[in-house]
Image 1 (cartoon, rainbow, N blue to C red):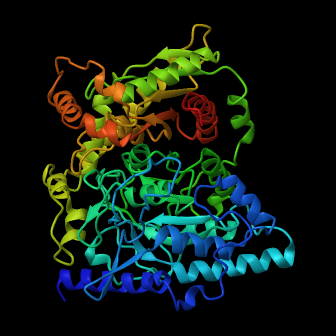
Image 2: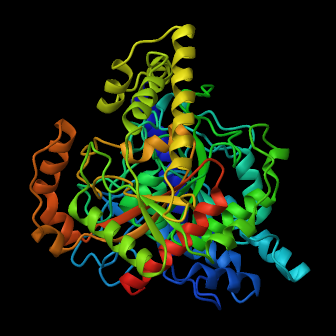
Image 3: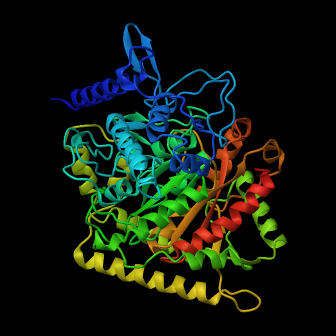
Length: 571
């Protein structure tokens, strides 16, 4: 069986699974489901309203799940007598705004987005039925995530489903058990409807692999939604999923969240369980990957984090630290003047005008609200990033090369460059690399303690760009230094929507002498695409960073910043 045969069979099975839920008539899967229900089933309604309706029985879980599957996840078009998936998940209608974060795409035809991988629709409806039954019998929700429509990056094990990581060679090897975080989500009441696309190797801010294809950006299909958790970002921004779970080892949650105008949270690596979540270079501990949530509201990020940590993940995963959720810390930072360090430019890739504008708007709003701003610099960043890059290829690319060649699939060009750029190092050299990392972590700790406010207060969090640019044409990403620095340090980081690209950004003067090759690339990228970026009103995010294991504090600062940004935008 060739790798192409495997791809054809996987896609055939997926198409068949979706067809059962996309037929316009005679569909037994929906015969007994009220697709209208008593509550508001629209993907536009605030999630807090949906949760309230679910808890009060005004809205049934089964109606909500069926609606999201049928109206937000599936549409079919018959071409030459064969059912063809449009989006393998989504479509847009020109008379409907699917998400408040997306502009109305007037005149844009139905077209593909390729976000789904594993389809769990039948199991989701069954789970929803059980949740409705539980609520009727006990007169209370089963948990704080009762009925929350949830999707997972195709990296989380779900019993009975493949976890491919975008590798053809991992197809047709269903997981024998749920990942720990999946078990916890189910106990909390979440309804998992699907798994979503990611890049071959996971190590890329694009979302493409030979098994499931290229995930495109709904604003413009020539643009990327980011990666590696790009499939999740598209689903969530489009309103089909209320909560997504991703992973982040260099920006994989934060980059697509920024590009798609949603919220994305990277906790420190030991706060949420990673057991049962396979990853490329599995077994390495030098720069651990983090599990984190993505959503269209900060409240959902807060709710999911609190609910998961209240469930004591350290009793289920040996790598989780036994630190309970500290709501008092969250409340403290939302109720006092803050000290915010601002990093406007990392000295390598100058942020594009809309990125800088949104950042400065946030800074002005923070100052006006009584918070103190401290200028931050990136003096330690180049060496941290160099160490991270050396860690990525410490095995000479053997792990990724083995996974790609297992079924004979072709390498995505970026992945091939990644594994060929470094040579395997000895154990001794690896130890020295770890020593450099520890020294840099210590130096950054000292830096954070040294740079203080005028009255001596310590910096609460940093505010900075997630990327030097918004979404860009496919394969256009090059510099991710604004995100991966925090993986080396294992710091907590949050991305919040800040605004959109405007015509004023295009008209603003932006000429400078490039500081190097990457800076020149950033300049030319803006010049070549600025009119289209403004026309599409592409989302612009901001990144909020706290120190290791400061999840509650970062979410609290995020709440303050998000409220100010929403006031600026008039939300």
